[in-house]
Image (cartoon, rainbow, N blue to C red; front, side):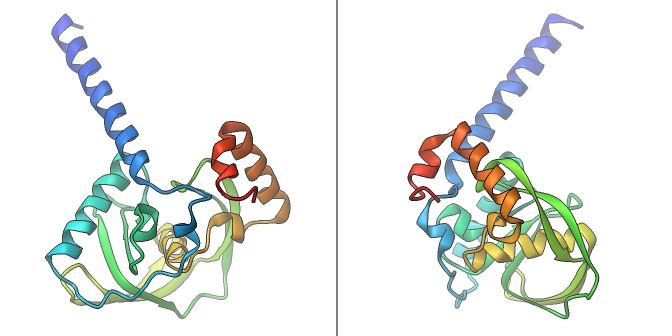
Length: 192
């Protein structure tokens, strides 16, 4: 490998690391009271909302993650973004219903609960209604990983975190790991 190629790779890695650090600074973490609030319905789908969605997609990709809800960046609006197949989607005022009877337990991580995963049981499919970032109606059936991601992000709109959806023992282990990794996070959470 040439010296120029190596320097380019090093510069690319440094830029990626910088972007990840910046993205993580923008994301609220467990203990921040905004994560426990119920987000308000979006009443105006406008340029400002589209700019917010675009910024959220960039933050989600840089963090890196597959979904992000507005409360995770400190905005109490019913807006979420996700990307499960290299095609980012925006959901405004999502309404989830027609959940399947079939459920599946799988480990989930969360940008707002950094560094831990825990088992969460969720329906494997559901109906999603709402609007896109231009105010156009959306109505589709989500299945598998897409359904899981949408449910996870929609939980954030209702002030629910994955620690609320897991078993007592998994929650205790996750909180212990968080405490060991960064006690300050949990101190601001009132000890959880």
